[in-house]
Image 1 (cartoon, protein in one colour):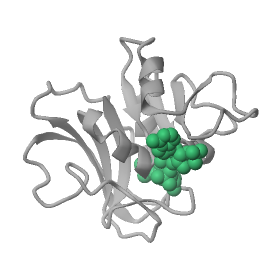
Image 2 (cartoon, helix red, strand yellow; image 1 turned 30 degrees about the vertical axis):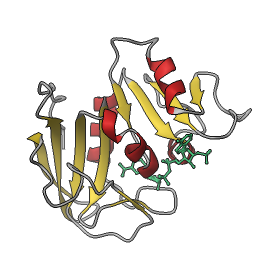
Image 3 (cartoon, helix red, strand yellow; image 1 turned 90 degrees about the horizontal axis):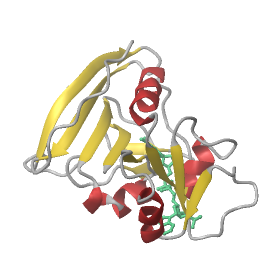
Image 4 (cartoon, protein in one colour; image 1 turned 120 degrees about the horizontal axis):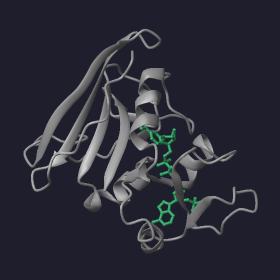
Length: 184
Ligand SMILES: NC(=O)c1ccc[n+]([C@@H]2O[C@H](COP(=O)([O-])OP(=O)(O)OC[C@H]3O[C@@H](n4cnc5c(N)ncnc54)[C@H](OP(=O)(O)O)[C@@H]3O)[C@@H](O)[C@H]2O)c1
């Protein structure tokens, strides 16, 4: 299972239900990387990202403790438990599964995630939602059981800071094919 996230220098991933930054190059990377795959998200991320319409060309799964809202699009899968998420993904055996957030969902699936695409935004932001403080996202002895491969470094003109996208994979797993380079 894969996870994809963007985090600031101080570990922030969200503020007021949204991303605290605007980095179109990273959004493009997110779209290219998750396209044609399964995306699994918490209800709050669903509301911030795609309550109007599911993410296109992806199988969308939302995790919530509540029943499916009447307004949810027909082609969004709604799950109430982690097991229900896996019941859905079992129907798509050859499709990659991406945990796309937010914080509670990264934490919930932590033990299943073998690959992380992490966008490091080299700037501090205020926020109310943080990346999990476990490797490879954070923590001191972070990267011992994780291999890494830098995908791209670029400068975000909109945010006025450097950005680096890195793929991590567990030492016990084969490396993944990185998606095509970004057009920045
Ligand atoms: N920087 C990034 O890469 C990135 C990526 C994604 C999101 N974000 C940001 O992260 C923030 C949202 O993250 P969040 O952690 O607050 O919320 P979230 O993980 O998106 O959603 C939390 C919700 O998921 C459901 N849920 C969680 N655990 C569950 C379980 N065990 N069983 C059933 N349902 C469960 C609950 O929904 P119910 O309340 O409906 O029960 C819970 O309120 C936003 O600011 C967003 O912009 C950032």
